[in-house]
Image 1 (tube, rainbow, N blue to C red):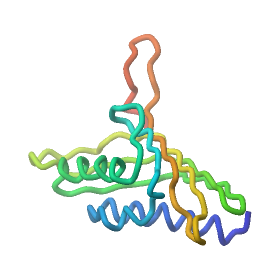
Image 2 (image 1 turned 90 degrees about the vertical axis):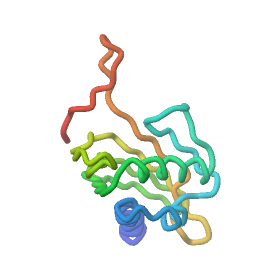
Image 3 (image 1 turned 180 degrees about the vertical axis):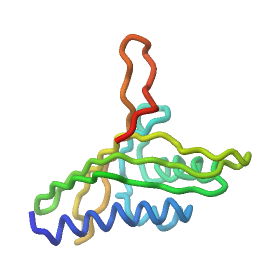
Image 4 (image 1 turned 45 degrees about the horizontal axis):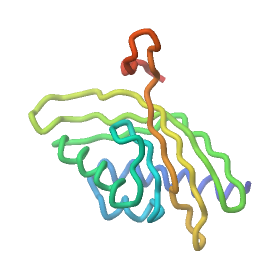
Length: 143
């Protein structure tokens, strides 16, 4: 992996942060492959295709009046045309009802493919740890 590719992938993830914060669906569309498969935190088990991925972001944008998105501790591993990255991420801000929220930290994994010279996300997965005894997600952990 060249440093150039890792830096380019990091810029892609930074661009996601900027476009989520700006509630820019059209801008986000440019970062995902058309056939992206997303294992997001909300049902169903998988969201297939760019329209499904953007619908998830649209629901987030509808819920928040003001929104901040943070990605922390990003690690990137890249080959010639395939790469992955993993990090912690958090949405926070002010909900439409006026309530401020610090959000929750989630784990996120990105799988990318270089398509026509551009790194695009072909798969992402967002998760929270599970407390096995209670069967509930643990949403109050900090990185």
